[in-house]
Image 1 (spheres, rainbow, N blue to C red):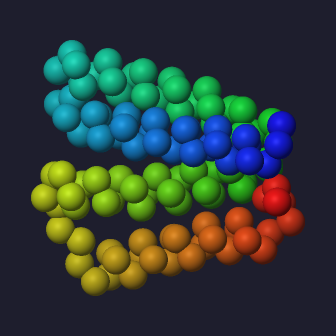
Image 2 (image 1 turned 45 degrees about the vertical axis):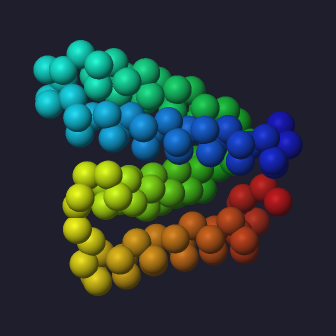
Length: 113
């Protein structure tokens, strides 16, 4: 699998996880059918595509990128659409997560280039 396709599958996994987690917040502890179905389907897609990335990249690198990007995107979704506030320490912490993912992708030999 080419590096571009590996990152493409990882990107799909990240987007699916963000959609699933957003729906999870709306599922009201799995008592609302629609958001519950989106949650289950989203996580199934996320883990399916995550497994494709794991064929090529080390588990730690894949998980660092997947979880880091997911945290930042979920925080952005919660801020924009759910009205959740992010204070300065939260923004600084998210910035450190972005920096960490960038360092892994740009400088680590474990990530495909």
